[in-house]
Length: 66
Image 1 (spheres, rainbow, N blue to C red):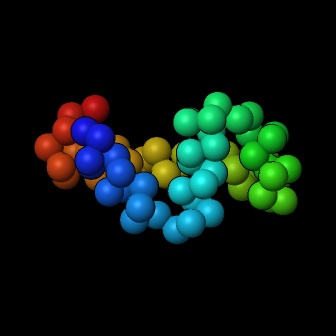
Image 2 (image 1 turned 180 degrees about the vertical axis):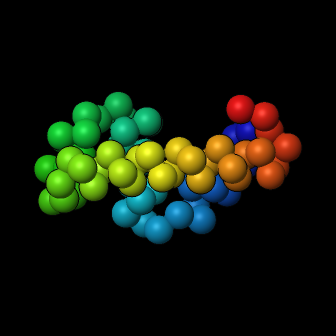
């Protein structure tokens, strides 16, 4: 699982990976992330939603059922 997750993260665009890690590794709020990256909270939410969906599909292709 760790290897699959790392491969997925490194395949993401740099900003997307950083937003995802800020939220789910460092537990930053959407507001904090938006301020740090100078983007709207809506953009952060959409990015996180799309990234979670892409991660689910990636893990299923790797044979990891979520």
